[in-house]
Amino acid sequence: MFKLAFFNIFRDVRRSMTVSFLLESSVVFLLLFIGYMNYSSEGMEMGLVSSTGHIQIAKKNYFNPKFSSIKNNLMLKDCEILQIKNEINKYSEFKSSNLIVNFEGLIGNSVVSKPFFATAFEDLDFATKSLSLVDGNPLFDSSVGDFLIGSNLAMSLGIESLTKKTSKLTLMTDMLGEGLILQDVRLSGIIKFPVIQTDSMVAITSINTLKSFFDFKDGVHVIQVYLKNNSFLNSFKDKLEVLRNKSNIDFEYSDWYEINPSFKSILGINEIMFKFLSILIILLIFISFFQIMTALGLERTRELGTLRAIGLTKLELFYTLFLEIFILTTINIILGIAISYFLKLIIGFYQIRFSPPGYTESYFINFLYYFSDICFVSLFIFLVAIISSVLPFIKVSKRSIVEVINNV
Image (cartoon, rainbow, N blue to C red; front, side, top):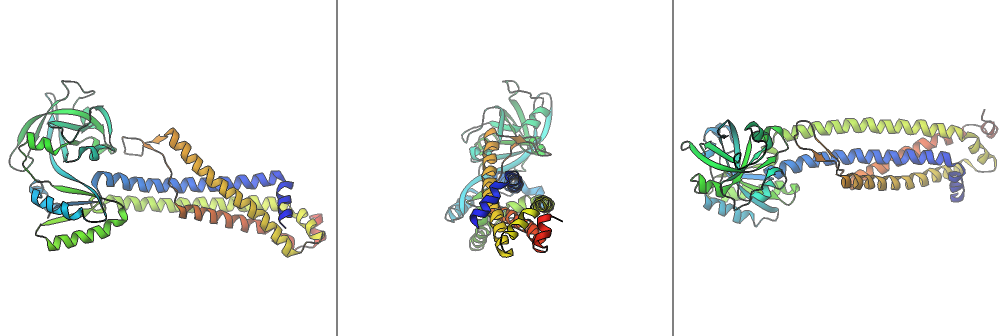
């Protein structure tokens, strides 16, 4: 049976090459499509988590919109920060943390001023490592008096490039709700945020700058917490709830889903589109397989009749046909998976980029394959190939040997 199956494969090379191309291209296309959709979802999640953390811990009511007018005054004290950090450092889910102070006001030069929202970080390197520096120098934890602003905000201030003159800016802010503060600062660099709205309004500095230039004494608005994995989110929140109940610290926490409420709806739309397109692609592949395999099967009608005439039973003919398509399908599924990974490496090597709608920065195109996706694609292609190949056998088995040989 094996010899006959291999003989049939190599006897008609054109037919075998056509089937092989159809199998390989279907596997490659499906895997690239699923891999890109996986990467898009993971990329959105990673992008949001990198900017917000998995969980943010703040003073009670800080995240409540009803208290937005006194939000700047809702700060965790240094002793509370130390107590919380000492506790969460013991949790197995914990990876790292950062301290954040948020404030807003006006930023400008001798020509123009613009509203801004600023974030001061304890660990600047960790906070800015995912952002692109367009001009100037990065900030360090020890930096004092230096700011980074978005490229669109810089353009709105008339800053096309950093010079000694254009790097001089003035801030006006009511940071702690205790009256306006006017302070000259230095623009260290211009960065590019991925989202246009953020790029047009946001500035970054260090907490050391606030302490040295703005008479900021202690405390932070937010403890930004990063976990080892997003799957640990619920267990970490349970431990925070226990800490809140047993400690005398009046704090609350919000996870990255709550901080980014639009993410779930965006992800939901993305999943609906993915499922809809997946169904269309699967139907297209299914129909294409049946049409091509049926056409090839009709060409083989006389051949299969001849095999019956020389003494093969219907069962033996079925086994031969099954082995033939099984061998072709298995080999070409493996080749298709290998080609998919090869294309992933090639695209990664050439660093092909694109800019999503509403984004100022382009991103590398990549593909993320899960083992479950590979299993699904392999099983789907295998079943379609087997089912569509059975049609010639059914046609032959219902007709007499004379009719089949004469292809009447």
